[in-house]
Length: 423
Image (cartoon, rainbow, N blue to C red):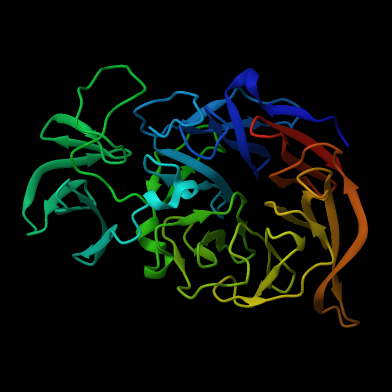
């Protein structure tokens, strides 16, 4: 086991949380939240680092998405910013990296739900396409078309156009951001901050997608995919389960999500261009973050966040429907986990102390009958110890058949380290 290396820390940013890592054809790509205050709100950017030599050396930190903000300050009570949070990456069959993240307009997100607008409709169908709705201060609504043009409730074209991440224009004049509070201000060239637009998006969570076609070197602008995967019963919150998604042997990308009502799995069969989900929820008794692996039979296993014995769920149809599974005989505090398969071995990283400490990787083995047919997972009492101090969110990726890349939070809301695990 290699020494732990600080990959995201104060030397190259602010307050880091939420690791995600994938192996894109030999290049390790690591992602994280880069926040100003260490809280789950405020000004939070998305950043990445890359390694082409199995984690021996890493590129400089690169910011790949910045949220609109009225303030980028580090005060823990600063809510004057929209924010990205909880990256989850997967490598598509065509080699692209797709990253899904949760996005909130200016607010504290789920940490102050009373400000989220549960009853305000965020999308409507127009000409067969689900389109965003934005509102003026009197409650009148407007529809944003695919090309960014804005029409009013009578379907008449307006002078408004939406560009980028919520940037609203009236003709050629920039008039503010739909994801921020406050009245229209004055544009100042070259500043990080902006101001609220006179038309605003409903305060709720949104799911955004970023794509890299060059192994994490460059990234697309974040794109809102919420309309394609939202259910009427989801309420004002649907969030990405951070870490890594799953690309199956048949080429389907699966990403774990969750709502107030239960866990959700979305899937794409075209390299992440379009997304679908089974509208039934919950999949399990677990309402929180979860992670997935694929067994040799094509069966998909999901592992949840709840404390005690880890909740488990199984899909027999490649992630469309799910059933409750047997809980692994593994105990952990309430915390996100990461799962990985190499050959017939299953690896599950998590804290093992009473709180978020004592990081370990639990071990499982795919079992088979005498005819070689898959029968389930046999969990071992052995574990790979990682550390004896703070250990929270983690993410694993395969480097090769005998080496795991592990990212984990080594300090509360401040530091993410990288370690190579030799099997």
